[in-house]
Image 1 (tube, protein in one colour):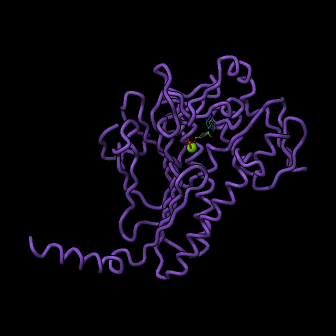
Image 2 (tube, protein in one colour):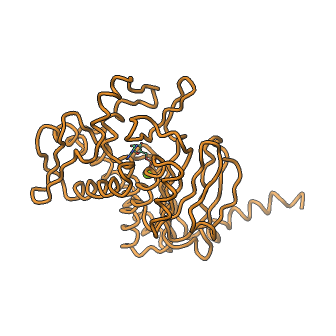
Image 3 (cartoon, protein in one colour):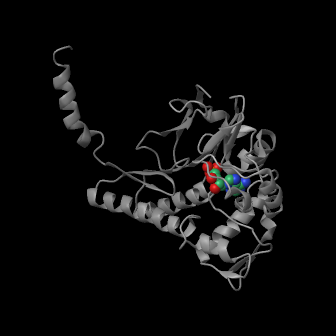
Length: 331
Ligand code: AMP
Ligand code: MG
C-alpha cells in the first residue's frame, strides 16, 4: 500500500478523465452578479463546448436586458421613463412583468418587484441603507398595483412618480430555465445549470441522483442538508448572501414590502419545483412570508416543496418532503 500509492494515484489520475469524467463537461463564468456553472453529459466534445457557451451567452443577453446597473438595459430605461410616460417594451420583458405580477397576486404582495422603490437605496457592499425618512416616504411606492401593463400597445407605466422595479427575485431562475431550454433543444439529457442559489437539473447524474447541498446559513464551510435530486429545479434564498450588520440588526437583500425593511423571520428557504422561474420567485416569496404563511402557501400548491431554516436554526419541511427527508447537519 505504502510505496505503491503514488504510482497508483498517478495511474488513476491518468485514467480518470476518460473513465469517469470522460463525457462530463463543465464550464462557468461570473454573470448577473453571481457564479454561473454549467455541467453537461455529452459524448461529443465540440457539441458540449458549444452548448456550454450558448448557455453562458444567453445569461449575458438576459443580464444586458434586465440589469438595473446597465444604462442600456431595458429595465434601466423603464425605471427612468415609466413613471412619466407609457413605455414600449419587448415581448420578453412584458411576459416577465406579467409573471412577476402573477406571483404578487399569488403571494398576497410578498413578492413585489416594486420593492426596488426602497431597495435601490441599499448598497450592501458599502454597508449603506436608507434612512427612516426615506423608508417612510417611499413605502407607499412599494405596491405592485402601481404597475400598469397594456397588452395591445405592449407598454408599461407606473401610476406614481418614483416607483422603481427590479427583477432580482426571478431573473436568475428565468435565465436558468432559458439555458435548460437551449440544452434540451440540443438533445442533451443530463445537465445541471446553477446561478448562485438557483439550479435546475436535467435528468439524473447518469444512473445516480445529483446531490444538491443547502448551505448552512451561519457557517460558510458547512451544509445544512444534502438532497439527492433528479429532473427538478431548486432555489435557495438566504439572509447570508448579501448583507451587513448594524447595531445588532442584519440588513440583507430580501425586503418585506409591508415594512420596507429586510425580512427577519427566516435564515433560508429552499424550494423544489418543476422550473427555476417558479422556484426562484417562490423562494423569495416564502422568505418574506415567514414560516407559517410560507409553509401554508407551499402546502397549498401541488407542484412545489420547501425546506425552511428559521432564525433559531431549526429546519422545517413542507408536507411532501417527508420522502426526501434530508440528512441535516449544522444550520
Ligand atoms: P433571491 O436570492 O432569489 O431570494 O433574490 C433576492 C433578490 O430578490 C434581491 O436581491 C432583490 O433583487 C429581489 N427582492 C428582494 N425583495 C423582494 C421582494 N419582496 N419581492 C421580489 N423581489 C425581491
Ligand atoms: Mg428567489
